[in-house]
Length: 322
Image 1: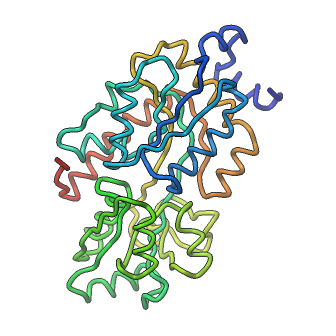
Image 2: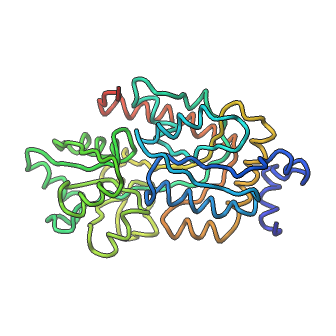
Image 3: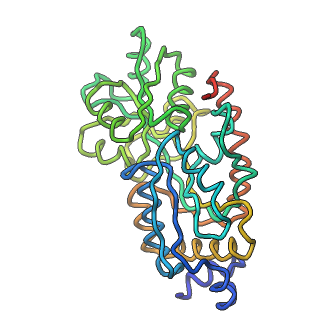
């Protein structure tokens, strides 16, 4: 471990004696269960992390995609897994903070069934429209949409951040919209590129290349500041909608009964990997904001975001998924 990475971990109190750290780590490959398909935003950042963990977790890391039900299938599997540190959920805001408000009968409880390990990264969204839509900014889109009986907005699934971003924008702007939910990321991207839907909030990692190539127009970004990948695109706040700022975040959780020593060792491994400049650079270049915060900070984030998204979901009038 180089000096800079050691200093980061020492400041966080996460350098364990070598023998203790190794003893607490699983002696088999760690499986990162991911609730979204290959090529999706969570998959991209999850695989970057897995590559970065090869040194910290010498037994190996395997990414296991289990898409479906906005990530609930993967979360349920990890919640019921053996608490030995070999099965972790690479989760995101939808599974770990939004789901309690979006499912009438959620098959897991994020607060009860998981032990936070570490926050890994966050990413903002861009509101994009087909390249041939006759608008060039959000004000133009709102005017265009208000003149129509209905606007179709695509999402990557019901109960996801992009879904509620679209609902919040429509509510604030007075648009009559219908959400079109796609089960696969590729299907949603095909729909917006082909003009089958007239708007969509997509993660920067997925939509920025299409915007840069001229295949989509980005009208606003959802974060508090402009995105480095799309510096010419204003924020929602700059566009007149300061209450609509939102983003997605990603992190690792273990089954709740995982021994504290094992969780601490897993946490130290993740933070060691996240302190490496090459991994942080790769994430930033793909549009993610590297985080690398420990289990206590991540647990606090999950609690705070659960309360925040409950208020958002209620405000949209969304009816819980059965």
